[in-house]
Image (cartoon, rainbow, N blue to C red; front, side, top):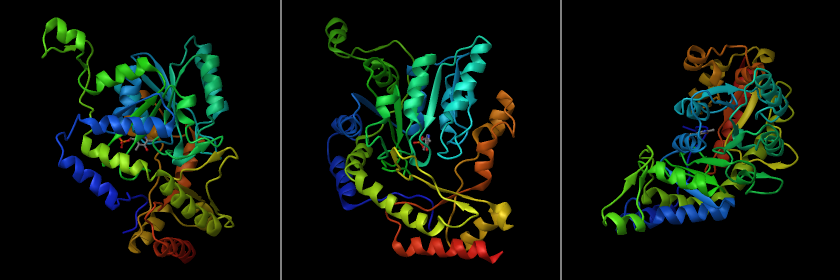
Length: 387
Ligand SMILES: *Cc1c(COP(=O)(O)O)cnc(C)c1O
């Protein structure tokens, strides 16, 4: 089966794991620290805190920024559920702003309109969770400008965009956002099996998330001196969102391969572009002049209405050829939970919904062979022309 995404594991990744298995610590050992230092170096952050998954990272991000009941936090409807669920975890109110039809990331003008609508009702928004969808960075300069103008917090849900560039800079994310979250799920750019991280330049945020990662337990030399060597204190409620040394060892090894992963993804995207650019009922991803795309996904828009075919028929035809297409994403506001709990309605974010109707994610991952890539292209062409 050829699926939309898949990990790439080599002998170095495997050796790194074996080494930890033979060492003293399987978790809470030195490799966690090492991975965090490497992340700081790669992505230009002062601090990073690795956690059990990207969703935990988003949850801790919200908590460390003090989100609570009554706070309004805005994100894009075209994202994975977790970008919005983290708002609900904190008891805050999720809201959405439609996407830009070109970049598929949050529309800046509509965001400002939304902020003004809230202000006219005497309400300030607390934060925006920007999502660098598919690996295309948001318009972060404008987001930063709005955040300063209207005084709200900025999170970059960067789970798709490790290795992307904005203004020729791979370290862009932490420059614009207060907190950056990453995921190392096997379909993402680098993997640790399950895993994630928060990156920040703010030492207070860093302290808070580190405590919350492990039950809120605090232990230091002063406490030991005063109360005894066993002593620890819990001031705030935390979780077990830790990640193991085993996983961090894969992470370190995978991080060294980031650039080569991105090159392979970009190469595949270029070949898809060449084949599909000229077809009038199909749009390939467009990219802004100031970015370099990380291609976690290769989302195309197939105008099914123009070819008299429906999406499910295409999915079935392709599945019969052992190719599993995917859709990213069902707009979050149309999920029953969001409709029932918050009153969101189908038709509320038209660009996102039309994007969803046409969107198909083609297989893209570093180990996709040339033969399989050609198979995807040929089978897609044939399937569409069958009808
Ligand atoms: C994968 C992903 C997450 C969640 O990460 P997990 O590690 O699976 O918990 C959050 N946001 C986006 C945009 C993602 O793609």
